[in-house]
Image (cartoon, rainbow, N blue to C red; front, side, top):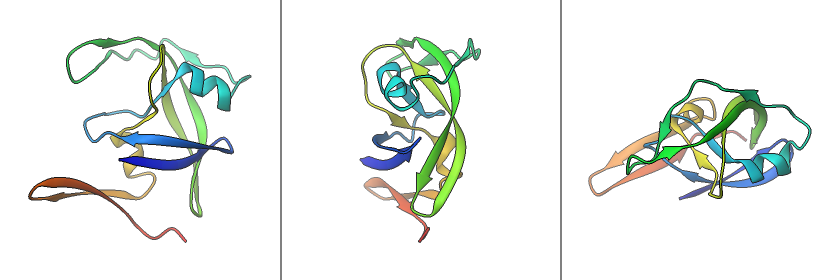
Length: 114
């Protein structure tokens, strides 16, 4: 499931990942939305994929996130390599999302922000 968010004024499609504890941007995407913004190096994170492979973390940053009328500065982890932006559980509450379990699937609901 893709969720479109505005990050630092640019529209970015995030893959919703209910298994991810943090929100993740590939370095090339981060560079396109914040080319001159420094990263907090060595945030002390040890991230792994669902299959157990390590995710090389470059750093962490604060980005300006907009969804409808909701606007916040939120932390994002920046990783090396190609990939898709992942919307992790750390942003769910901040962006007013709720995960609802349906017997055969998980659904992400949004609350009204208009």
